[in-house]
Length: 445
Image 1 (cartoon, rainbow, N blue to C red):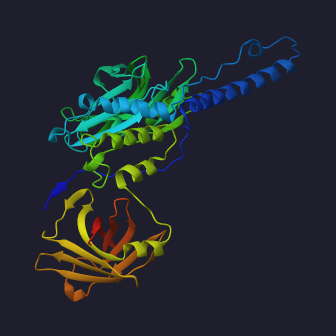
Image 2 (cartoon, rainbow, N blue to C red):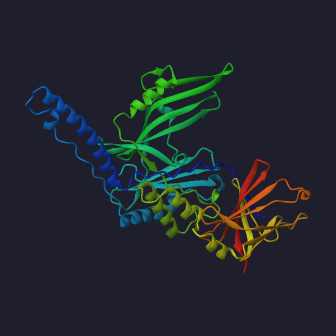
Image 3 (tube, rainbow, N blue to C red):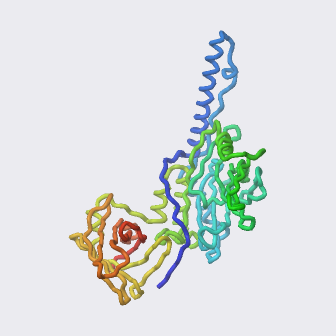
Protein backbone atom coordinates (compact mmCIF):
# COMPACT_ATOMS: atom_id res chain seq x y z
CA UNK A 1 0.00 0.00 0.00
CA UNK A 2 1.33 3.42 -0.91
CA UNK A 3 0.66 6.16 1.61
CA UNK A 4 1.22 9.85 1.48
CA UNK A 5 0.56 11.79 4.66
CA UNK A 6 -0.08 15.51 4.51
CA UNK A 7 0.07 17.83 7.49
CA UNK A 8 -2.06 20.74 6.40
CA UNK A 9 -5.24 22.67 6.96
CA UNK A 10 -7.85 23.40 4.33
CA UNK A 11 -8.34 27.11 4.11
CA UNK A 12 -11.91 28.28 4.05
CA UNK A 13 -12.73 29.17 0.48
CA UNK A 14 -14.91 32.17 0.03
CA UNK A 15 -16.61 32.79 -3.26
CA UNK A 16 -16.93 36.54 -3.65
CA UNK A 17 -17.66 38.77 -6.62
CA UNK A 18 -14.58 39.65 -8.63
CA UNK A 19 -14.08 43.35 -9.22
CA UNK A 20 -11.54 43.02 -12.02
CA UNK A 21 -12.89 42.27 -15.46
CA UNK A 22 -9.73 43.09 -17.38
CA UNK A 23 -6.54 45.02 -16.83
CA UNK A 24 -7.73 48.04 -18.76
CA UNK A 25 -11.17 48.01 -17.25
CA UNK A 26 -9.85 47.88 -13.70
CA UNK A 27 -7.69 50.94 -13.98
CA UNK A 28 -10.44 52.78 -15.80
CA UNK A 29 -13.02 51.74 -13.23
CA UNK A 30 -10.95 52.84 -10.25
CA UNK A 31 -9.89 56.05 -11.89
CA UNK A 32 -13.46 56.90 -12.87
CA UNK A 33 -14.77 56.19 -9.37
CA UNK A 34 -12.11 58.45 -7.88
CA UNK A 35 -12.94 61.09 -10.48
CA UNK A 36 -16.61 60.80 -9.50
CA UNK A 37 -15.70 61.46 -5.90
CA UNK A 38 -13.67 64.48 -6.97
CA UNK A 39 -16.55 65.71 -9.15
CA UNK A 40 -18.93 65.48 -6.21
CA UNK A 41 -16.58 67.58 -4.13
CA UNK A 42 -16.13 70.03 -7.00
CA UNK A 43 -19.89 70.42 -7.37
CA UNK A 44 -20.18 71.20 -3.68
CA UNK A 45 -17.42 73.78 -4.05
CA UNK A 46 -19.21 75.34 -7.03
CA UNK A 47 -22.44 75.55 -5.07
CA UNK A 48 -20.61 77.31 -2.25
CA UNK A 49 -19.13 79.81 -4.71
CA UNK A 50 -22.55 80.49 -6.24
CA UNK A 51 -24.09 81.01 -2.82
CA UNK A 52 -21.48 83.67 -2.11
CA UNK A 53 -22.33 85.46 -5.33
CA UNK A 54 -19.04 84.69 -7.04
CA UNK A 55 -19.13 85.01 -10.80
CA UNK A 56 -15.55 83.86 -11.41
CA UNK A 57 -14.42 80.36 -12.36
CA UNK A 58 -13.65 77.99 -9.51
CA UNK A 59 -10.32 76.20 -9.16
CA UNK A 60 -12.05 72.96 -10.07
CA UNK A 61 -13.33 74.50 -13.30
CA UNK A 62 -9.87 75.83 -14.17
CA UNK A 63 -8.10 72.52 -13.55
CA UNK A 64 -8.21 69.84 -16.22
CA UNK A 65 -9.94 66.63 -15.08
CA UNK A 66 -7.65 63.69 -14.29
CA UNK A 67 -7.35 61.29 -17.19
CA UNK A 68 -8.43 57.69 -16.76
CA UNK A 69 -5.41 55.47 -16.99
CA UNK A 70 -5.70 52.88 -19.75
CA UNK A 71 -3.81 49.71 -18.97
CA UNK A 72 -2.89 47.31 -21.74
CA UNK A 73 -5.28 44.38 -21.84
CA UNK A 74 -3.94 40.87 -22.35
CA UNK A 75 -5.83 39.18 -25.17
CA UNK A 76 -5.86 35.40 -25.48
CA UNK A 77 -3.22 35.27 -28.18
CA UNK A 78 -0.81 37.38 -26.16
CA UNK A 79 -1.65 35.58 -22.94
CA UNK A 80 -0.93 32.12 -24.32
CA UNK A 81 2.25 33.38 -26.01
CA UNK A 82 3.45 34.65 -22.63
CA UNK A 83 2.56 31.39 -20.91
CA UNK A 84 4.55 29.55 -23.55
CA UNK A 85 7.57 31.73 -22.71
CA UNK A 86 7.30 30.67 -19.07
CA UNK A 87 6.98 27.01 -20.02
CA UNK A 88 9.89 27.20 -22.44
CA UNK A 89 12.03 28.29 -19.47
CA UNK A 90 10.65 25.66 -17.09
CA UNK A 91 13.98 23.87 -16.62
CA UNK A 92 15.54 27.07 -15.29
CA UNK A 93 12.71 28.44 -13.16
CA UNK A 94 10.69 25.58 -11.67
CA UNK A 95 11.72 24.01 -8.40
CA UNK A 96 13.51 20.66 -8.67
CA UNK A 97 11.36 17.58 -8.24
CA UNK A 98 12.80 16.58 -4.86
CA UNK A 99 11.61 16.09 -1.28
CA UNK A 100 13.04 19.51 -0.44
CA UNK A 101 10.22 20.97 -2.53
CA UNK A 102 7.44 18.49 -1.82
CA UNK A 103 4.89 21.31 -1.67
CA UNK A 104 5.04 23.77 -4.55
CA UNK A 105 2.51 26.31 -5.79
CA UNK A 106 2.22 28.62 -8.73
CA UNK A 107 0.07 31.57 -9.71
CA UNK A 108 0.04 34.02 -12.60
CA UNK A 109 -0.98 37.65 -12.35
CA UNK A 110 -0.18 41.11 -13.68
CA UNK A 111 0.65 43.09 -10.57
CA UNK A 112 1.73 46.26 -12.35
CA UNK A 113 -1.10 46.02 -14.91
CA UNK A 114 1.31 46.57 -17.78
CA UNK A 115 0.09 43.68 -19.91
CA UNK A 116 3.13 41.52 -19.09
CA UNK A 117 2.38 38.65 -16.73
CA UNK A 118 4.26 37.56 -13.64
CA UNK A 119 4.68 33.92 -12.68
CA UNK A 120 4.98 33.48 -8.91
CA UNK A 121 6.38 30.18 -7.64
CA UNK A 122 6.70 29.01 -4.06
CA UNK A 123 8.28 25.86 -2.73
CA UNK A 124 8.66 24.21 0.65
CA UNK A 125 9.44 20.83 2.16
CA UNK A 126 5.93 20.56 3.58
CA UNK A 127 2.72 22.56 3.72
CA UNK A 128 3.00 25.37 6.26
CA UNK A 129 6.78 25.51 6.25
CA UNK A 130 8.57 28.71 5.30
CA UNK A 131 8.38 29.09 1.54
CA UNK A 132 11.06 29.92 -0.94
CA UNK A 133 9.57 32.28 -3.50
CA UNK A 134 10.52 33.02 -7.08
CA UNK A 135 8.92 35.71 -9.24
CA UNK A 136 9.41 36.12 -12.98
CA UNK A 137 7.95 38.73 -15.31
CA UNK A 138 7.78 38.71 -19.10
CA UNK A 139 10.30 41.10 -20.63
CA UNK A 140 9.24 44.19 -22.56
CA UNK A 141 9.81 42.56 -25.93
CA UNK A 142 7.78 39.54 -24.84
CA UNK A 143 10.48 37.02 -25.71
CA UNK A 144 11.98 36.24 -22.30
CA UNK A 145 11.68 36.57 -18.55
CA UNK A 146 13.50 38.36 -15.74
CA UNK A 147 13.36 38.38 -11.94
CA UNK A 148 12.12 41.60 -10.32
CA UNK A 149 14.11 42.91 -7.37
CA UNK A 150 12.67 43.34 -3.88
CA UNK A 151 12.94 46.38 -1.67
CA UNK A 152 11.30 47.21 1.66
CA UNK A 153 10.83 50.48 3.51
CA UNK A 154 8.90 51.49 6.58
CA UNK A 155 8.66 49.97 10.03
CA UNK A 156 11.42 47.42 10.69
CA UNK A 157 11.89 47.05 6.93
CA UNK A 158 15.06 45.02 7.43
CA UNK A 159 12.94 42.18 8.82
CA UNK A 160 10.96 41.77 5.58
CA UNK A 161 12.91 39.92 2.93
CA UNK A 162 10.03 39.03 0.62
CA UNK A 163 6.31 38.37 0.28
CA UNK A 164 4.95 34.85 0.56
CA UNK A 165 2.18 35.09 -2.01
CA UNK A 166 1.10 31.49 -1.40
CA UNK A 167 -0.34 32.60 1.94
CA UNK A 168 -2.97 34.76 0.26
CA UNK A 169 -5.85 33.49 -1.83
CA UNK A 170 -6.76 37.11 -2.43
CA UNK A 171 -5.57 40.58 -1.47
CA UNK A 172 -7.10 44.03 -1.39
CA UNK A 173 -5.70 46.72 -3.60
CA UNK A 174 -6.17 50.21 -4.97
CA UNK A 175 -5.03 52.02 -8.10
CA UNK A 176 -3.03 55.23 -7.67
CA UNK A 177 -3.73 57.47 -10.64
CA UNK A 178 -0.86 59.84 -9.95
CA UNK A 179 1.69 57.04 -9.73
CA UNK A 180 0.02 55.04 -12.46
CA UNK A 181 0.29 51.76 -10.57
CA UNK A 182 -1.68 49.38 -8.42
CA UNK A 183 -0.94 48.86 -4.73
CA UNK A 184 -1.78 45.67 -2.84
CA UNK A 185 -2.43 45.34 0.87
CA UNK A 186 -1.55 42.35 3.01
CA UNK A 187 -1.20 41.53 6.67
CA UNK A 188 1.97 39.50 7.05
CA UNK A 189 2.07 37.44 10.24
CA UNK A 190 5.42 36.76 11.85
CA UNK A 191 6.83 34.96 14.87
CA UNK A 192 10.13 35.09 16.69
CA UNK A 193 10.23 31.92 18.72
CA UNK A 194 13.53 32.87 20.33
CA UNK A 195 12.16 36.09 21.84
CA UNK A 196 8.56 34.80 22.04
CA UNK A 197 7.35 37.90 20.20
CA UNK A 198 4.59 37.47 17.63
CA UNK A 199 2.43 39.76 15.56
CA UNK A 200 1.63 41.12 12.11
CA UNK A 201 2.95 43.73 9.72
CA UNK A 202 0.65 45.70 7.45
CA UNK A 203 2.29 45.94 4.04
CA UNK A 204 1.47 48.06 1.00
CA UNK A 205 3.36 46.64 -1.98
CA UNK A 206 3.52 47.25 -5.71
CA UNK A 207 5.57 46.20 -8.71
CA UNK A 208 7.24 49.26 -10.17
CA UNK A 209 9.92 49.36 -12.88
CA UNK A 210 11.18 45.87 -12.14
CA UNK A 211 11.14 46.17 -8.35
CA UNK A 212 8.61 44.90 -5.84
CA UNK A 213 8.39 47.82 -3.43
CA UNK A 214 7.02 46.97 0.00
CA UNK A 215 6.07 49.69 2.48
CA UNK A 216 5.39 48.49 6.04
CA UNK A 217 2.95 51.12 7.22
CA UNK A 218 1.73 49.45 10.42
CA UNK A 219 2.74 46.76 12.86
CA UNK A 220 1.56 45.19 16.06
CA UNK A 221 3.32 42.72 18.32
CA UNK A 222 2.37 40.72 21.36
CA UNK A 223 4.27 38.69 23.91
CA UNK A 224 3.37 36.82 27.08
CA UNK A 225 4.97 38.47 30.09
CA UNK A 226 4.21 37.88 33.76
CA UNK A 227 1.07 35.85 33.04
CA UNK A 228 -0.39 38.41 30.65
CA UNK A 229 -0.19 39.42 27.00
CA UNK A 230 1.53 42.70 26.22
CA UNK A 231 0.50 44.35 22.95
CA UNK A 232 2.37 47.06 21.06
CA UNK A 233 0.84 49.04 18.18
CA UNK A 234 3.21 50.91 15.88
CA UNK A 235 2.75 53.40 13.06
CA UNK A 236 5.47 54.92 10.88
CA UNK A 237 6.02 57.84 13.25
CA UNK A 238 4.50 56.83 16.56
CA UNK A 239 3.22 54.14 18.87
CA UNK A 240 -0.47 53.94 19.67
CA UNK A 241 -1.81 53.52 23.17
CA UNK A 242 -4.80 51.37 22.27
CA UNK A 243 -5.94 48.94 19.60
CA UNK A 244 -8.79 51.29 18.69
CA UNK A 245 -6.34 54.10 17.92
CA UNK A 246 -4.28 51.75 15.79
CA UNK A 247 -7.35 50.58 13.87
CA UNK A 248 -8.37 54.19 13.28
CA UNK A 249 -4.93 54.83 11.81
CA UNK A 250 -5.25 51.79 9.52
CA UNK A 251 -8.63 53.02 8.32
CA UNK A 252 -7.25 56.51 7.72
CA UNK A 253 -4.44 55.06 5.61
CA UNK A 254 -6.99 54.08 2.98
CA UNK A 255 -9.08 57.21 3.22
CA UNK A 256 -10.04 58.44 -0.23
CA UNK A 257 -8.96 55.20 -1.92
CA UNK A 258 -11.25 52.90 -3.88
CA UNK A 259 -10.24 49.50 -2.55
CA UNK A 260 -10.88 46.41 -4.65
CA UNK A 261 -10.39 42.70 -4.17
CA UNK A 262 -7.88 40.77 -6.29
CA UNK A 263 -8.13 36.98 -6.36
CA UNK A 264 -5.18 34.71 -7.06
CA UNK A 265 -5.53 31.43 -8.92
CA UNK A 266 -3.23 29.31 -6.77
CA UNK A 267 -2.36 25.86 -8.07
CA UNK A 268 -0.92 23.35 -5.57
CA UNK A 269 -0.64 20.12 -7.55
CA UNK A 270 -0.82 16.62 -6.14
CA UNK A 271 0.53 17.46 -2.71
CA UNK A 272 -2.90 18.46 -1.50
CA UNK A 273 -5.19 17.49 -4.40
CA UNK A 274 -4.40 13.91 -5.39
CA UNK A 275 -6.60 13.92 -8.50
CA UNK A 276 -5.35 17.26 -9.83
CA UNK A 277 -3.64 17.96 -13.15
CA UNK A 278 -0.40 16.85 -11.48
CA UNK A 279 2.72 18.54 -10.17
CA UNK A 280 3.96 21.45 -12.23
CA UNK A 281 7.49 20.04 -12.26
CA UNK A 282 6.41 16.94 -14.19
CA UNK A 283 3.29 18.18 -15.97
CA UNK A 284 3.13 18.10 -19.76
CA UNK A 285 3.84 21.51 -21.27
CA UNK A 286 0.46 21.93 -22.98
CA UNK A 287 -1.37 21.25 -19.75
CA UNK A 288 0.96 23.55 -17.78
CA UNK A 289 0.22 26.37 -20.19
CA UNK A 290 -3.50 25.94 -19.43
CA UNK A 291 -2.86 25.92 -15.67
CA UNK A 292 -0.86 29.15 -15.99
CA UNK A 293 -3.32 30.86 -18.35
CA UNK A 294 -6.37 30.06 -16.22
CA UNK A 295 -4.52 31.27 -13.12
CA UNK A 296 -4.14 34.65 -14.79
CA UNK A 297 -7.83 34.59 -15.70
CA UNK A 298 -8.69 34.31 -11.99
CA UNK A 299 -6.61 37.40 -11.29
CA UNK A 300 -8.25 39.22 -14.21
CA UNK A 301 -11.76 38.30 -13.05
CA UNK A 302 -12.39 36.15 -16.12
CA UNK A 303 -12.65 32.92 -14.10
CA UNK A 304 -13.95 32.30 -10.61
CA UNK A 305 -11.40 30.92 -8.15
CA UNK A 306 -13.76 28.08 -7.30
CA UNK A 307 -14.07 27.17 -10.97
CA UNK A 308 -10.27 27.17 -11.26
CA UNK A 309 -10.05 24.79 -8.32
CA UNK A 310 -12.69 22.48 -9.75
CA UNK A 311 -11.14 22.38 -13.22
CA UNK A 312 -7.48 21.91 -12.34
CA UNK A 313 -7.32 20.56 -8.80
CA UNK A 314 -10.55 18.69 -8.07
CA UNK A 315 -11.47 17.65 -11.62
CA UNK A 316 -14.98 18.23 -10.43
CA UNK A 317 -18.02 17.38 -12.52
CA UNK A 318 -21.10 18.34 -10.48
CA UNK A 319 -24.50 16.99 -11.46
CA UNK A 320 -27.78 18.87 -11.53
CA UNK A 321 -29.93 15.72 -11.79
CA UNK A 322 -29.49 12.95 -9.16
CA UNK A 323 -31.18 10.49 -11.52
CA UNK A 324 -28.42 11.11 -14.05
CA UNK A 325 -25.82 10.60 -11.33
CA UNK A 326 -27.42 7.28 -10.36
CA UNK A 327 -27.43 6.18 -13.98
CA UNK A 328 -23.69 6.93 -14.30
CA UNK A 329 -22.93 5.32 -10.93
CA UNK A 330 -24.47 1.93 -11.70
CA UNK A 331 -21.80 -0.78 -11.80
CA UNK A 332 -18.85 -2.12 -9.83
CA UNK A 333 -16.14 0.12 -8.44
CA UNK A 334 -12.81 -0.45 -6.69
CA UNK A 335 -11.19 1.89 -4.18
CA UNK A 336 -8.43 4.08 -5.59
CA UNK A 337 -7.64 6.44 -2.72
CA UNK A 338 -8.99 7.95 0.47
CA UNK A 339 -8.47 11.51 1.65
CA UNK A 340 -9.07 11.80 5.38
CA UNK A 341 -8.51 15.37 6.52
CA UNK A 342 -5.41 15.65 4.36
CA UNK A 343 -4.06 12.15 4.92
CA UNK A 344 -3.94 10.53 1.49
CA UNK A 345 -3.80 6.75 1.08
CA UNK A 346 -3.67 4.94 -2.26
CA UNK A 347 -4.94 1.36 -2.57
CA UNK A 348 -4.40 -1.76 -4.65
CA UNK A 349 -6.90 -4.68 -4.60
CA UNK A 350 -4.62 -6.81 -2.42
CA UNK A 351 -4.13 -4.11 0.23
CA UNK A 352 -5.65 -4.23 3.68
CA UNK A 353 -8.81 -2.11 4.05
CA UNK A 354 -9.44 -2.16 0.31
CA UNK A 355 -13.12 -1.60 -0.63
CA UNK A 356 -15.46 -2.74 -3.38
CA UNK A 357 -18.61 -0.86 -4.26
CA UNK A 358 -21.65 -1.93 -6.26
CA UNK A 359 -24.41 0.49 -7.26
CA UNK A 360 -27.68 -0.85 -8.70
CA UNK A 361 -30.37 0.72 -10.85
CA UNK A 362 -32.93 0.54 -8.03
CA UNK A 363 -30.74 2.86 -5.91
CA UNK A 364 -29.25 0.15 -3.71
CA UNK A 365 -25.57 0.51 -2.85
CA UNK A 366 -23.46 -2.34 -1.45
CA UNK A 367 -20.10 -1.53 0.08
CA UNK A 368 -17.63 -4.22 1.06
CA UNK A 369 -15.09 -2.68 3.41
CA UNK A 370 -12.16 -3.76 5.59
CA UNK A 371 -11.21 -6.24 2.89
CA UNK A 372 -8.10 -8.41 3.31
CA UNK A 373 -8.56 -8.23 7.09
CA UNK A 374 -10.38 -10.34 9.66
CA UNK A 375 -13.03 -7.62 9.98
CA UNK A 376 -14.38 -7.63 6.42
CA UNK A 377 -17.88 -6.15 6.47
CA UNK A 378 -20.70 -5.47 4.01
CA UNK A 379 -22.79 -2.33 4.20
CA UNK A 380 -26.08 -1.98 2.30
CA UNK A 381 -27.85 1.37 1.98
CA UNK A 382 -30.69 2.80 -0.07
CA UNK A 383 -29.68 5.92 -1.97
CA UNK A 384 -31.92 8.97 -1.95
CA UNK A 385 -31.73 12.39 -3.55
CA UNK A 386 -29.56 14.73 -1.52
CA UNK A 387 -29.08 18.49 -1.92
CA UNK A 388 -28.40 19.47 -5.55
CA UNK A 389 -27.65 16.55 -7.82
CA UNK A 390 -26.21 14.18 -5.19
CA UNK A 391 -27.19 10.85 -3.66
CA UNK A 392 -27.16 9.97 0.02
CA UNK A 393 -27.30 6.74 1.97
CA UNK A 394 -27.18 6.41 5.75
CA UNK A 395 -26.00 3.23 7.45
CA UNK A 396 -26.99 2.50 11.04
CA UNK A 397 -25.06 -0.50 12.42
CA UNK A 398 -26.49 -3.08 14.77
CA UNK A 399 -25.36 -2.22 18.33
CA UNK A 400 -24.03 -5.77 18.57
CA UNK A 401 -21.52 -5.02 15.83
CA UNK A 402 -19.52 -2.85 18.21
CA UNK A 403 -18.88 -0.10 15.65
CA UNK A 404 -17.36 3.14 16.88
CA UNK A 405 -20.13 5.17 15.24
CA UNK A 406 -23.93 5.21 15.55
CA UNK A 407 -24.45 6.29 11.95
CA UNK A 408 -22.38 6.57 8.79
CA UNK A 409 -23.45 8.96 6.04
CA UNK A 410 -22.33 8.10 2.51
CA UNK A 411 -22.86 10.75 -0.17
CA UNK A 412 -22.12 10.11 -3.84
CA UNK A 413 -21.23 13.62 -4.94
CA UNK A 414 -20.20 13.05 -8.56
CA UNK A 415 -18.41 11.09 -11.22
CA UNK A 416 -15.47 13.42 -11.74
CA UNK A 417 -13.82 14.30 -15.04
CA UNK A 418 -11.36 11.43 -14.53
CA UNK A 419 -14.28 8.99 -14.41
CA UNK A 420 -13.91 8.37 -10.67
CA UNK A 421 -16.91 7.94 -8.39
CA UNK A 422 -16.49 10.28 -5.43
CA UNK A 423 -18.05 9.56 -2.04
CA UNK A 424 -17.97 11.87 0.97
CA UNK A 425 -18.44 10.22 4.36
CA UNK A 426 -19.21 11.44 7.85
CA UNK A 427 -19.76 9.47 11.02
CA UNK A 428 -21.67 10.38 14.17
CA UNK A 429 -21.79 9.08 17.72
CA UNK A 430 -24.97 10.52 19.15
CA UNK A 431 -24.71 14.25 18.52
CA UNK A 432 -20.94 14.13 18.24
CA UNK A 433 -19.34 14.43 14.84
CA UNK A 434 -16.49 11.92 14.65
CA UNK A 435 -14.99 12.95 11.34
CA UNK A 436 -15.23 12.36 7.63
CA UNK A 437 -13.33 11.31 4.57
CA UNK A 438 -13.48 11.44 0.78
CA UNK A 439 -13.21 8.17 -1.13
CA UNK A 440 -12.37 7.85 -4.81
CA UNK A 441 -13.39 4.70 -6.71
CA UNK A 442 -12.44 3.59 -10.22
CA UNK A 443 -14.76 1.59 -12.46
CA UNK A 444 -14.11 -2.15 -12.64
CA UNK A 445 -14.59 -3.62 -16.10
